[in-house]
Length: 419
Ligand code: GLY
Image (cartoon, rainbow, N blue to C red; front, side, top):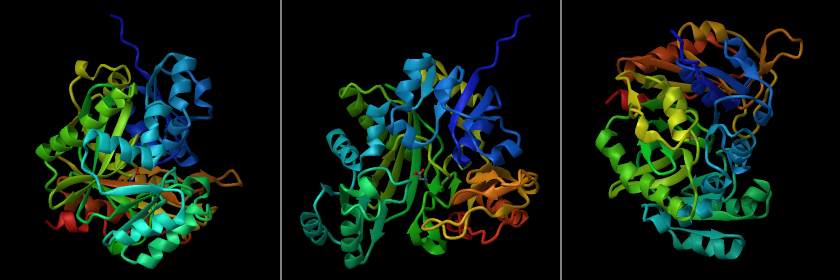
């Protein structure tokens, strides 16, 4: 009897999100991560050096936004003729330019906060002063998730406008900015897998963007997440698909854009309904670290179907009743000035207790052991029958890992697990 060969999947990227993708994909496929990191290798994931164009795979899954905005998906499709999950540079512009994203949302009739885009300080500040608090100032271009200021302090917002537009704080990414009225309410992340024409939702998650407990401190790439989210039932997720994801996909189609990848809607649950704060064109990080462990079945097959434009030929993703809570362990000084190069102890010990997803981890210069090599170093995910159980599980595992100045939030999922 002949056996169908396993799909060969290459996950492109080197963070915790790519590690979580690799683990879920490996349930049914052969997987390599390009470039990955030393922590992933230590935990048994096959990592290979790039560029991805030089590798052979049946399916490429591109994790981070920067290579998507830079056209990696286009190059891979042209050079290899293989399946690629990730939009071309045209669709990735949705994340690469906040002003363009807002224009697409407006055209598509997707609910979003009032905004304007600026390249000069005086009109920007005039607009800022016309809005009620809180104020939101975003770099138009990519800034590794750190280009957004949300503040109740008008003088801080004005100073941020000047720093961004002058190029002082984020270089060229900030020479154009989007100012919008801040909306308040609980946040929700809904990711949908798109095949150009169709979209299917993944389980909803909640992300914690601020560095400190109680949502204090600067914005980060994300300090933790949990899934499922109480109150974000299937009906609510379907509403997000109908009112935000599908209209956006259609607006992209109207522009001739064949979007095959993940549309990630960052939402705020305002009193009048959900409103889109941002769209990303990839899996969220750390949302992936709580959603993928809950995804049951053939993850690789569904991702391949999306990349092939054939989501109608596979069963939609199903998620276990288990709860997942992820806590990001970061380097001291993250996100402003992360200090790296410190020896890491206990990675394998923690992996015996919870899911460990390696991000900013590098080889020790001596060749023996691992050191911190980025701001977000490791993401730990605990699973359990309830959010409370999953939360206990992950926080109980944190002391297994150590490096100098290790920092993390102690309130991930605290409010939700007490509901
Ligand atoms: N967790 C937010 C993001 O992935 O952009």
